[in-house]
Image 1 (cartoon, rainbow, N blue to C red):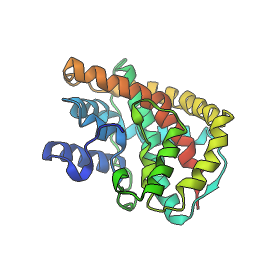
Image 2 (image 1 turned 180 degrees about the vertical axis):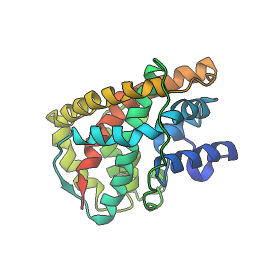
Image 3 (image 1 turned 90 degrees about the vertical axis):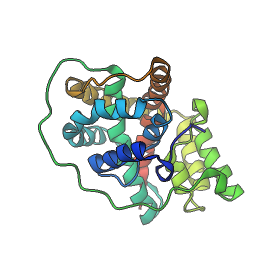
Image 4 (image 1 turned 45 degrees about the vertical axis):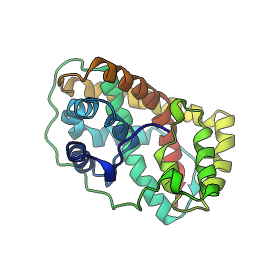
Length: 244
C-alpha cells in the first residue's frame, strides 16, 4: 500500500496543515494523496501552499466538472452514500487542484476572496486494512485490484466502505464489468477533459513557494501523475454512482 501519515498519527506540523485542508475544503477528512505527501520531505507544505490561493475558485470548478458527467446509479444505502459524498467533493477538488499543481504556474492572477465551503458532516472512522476481518480485507483488496494501479494503491473510499462489510463484494461485482468493458475508462476520459480545462484556469493563481528537496519532489511528481491521470479520475465517476 501507498505510504501515508494518517490523521490520528500526524505530528504537530503535519496535523496543522491537515486542519487547514479540512477547513478550506469543507471536509472532515484528509484524502490519501495529501496523507502520502506528508511522508515526503517538504512536499506537504509545498503542495498546500502552492494551491491554497486558488481555493476560492474551486467550488465553481468542481461543480462544472460534475455537471459534465452522466453516470449510472449504484444504490448503497443512506449512510454509505453520505460517505461517498465526502469523497466526491474531495476527489473532484483534488483532481483539479493537483492537475494544476503538476502542470505548474502559468501567468499571474489573484483569485477573489471567498469563504470556505460549509463543512460536510463527519464520517465514520477510517478502518485499517490490517485490522479488518479477513473476508472484508480480501474484498477491499479485490476492489483495489480492479484498477491495476501501481504502488499498491487502494483508493481510500473502498477501505472506508468496509465499515459496512456487506458492501465491498457486491460493489466489486457491479464495477468489474464496467471496468472490463471500458465504461469506467470512458468516464475517466470525460472527467480528465473537464478537469483539464478547470485546472488551467487555476494555474495563474498558484503560488510559487520554495520547492522541496529534488528527490522528494521527483517522488511526489511520480505519484501525483498516477493520481491525476488514473486513481482520482476513475474514482470520481465511481463515487458519483454511489447513491442511497
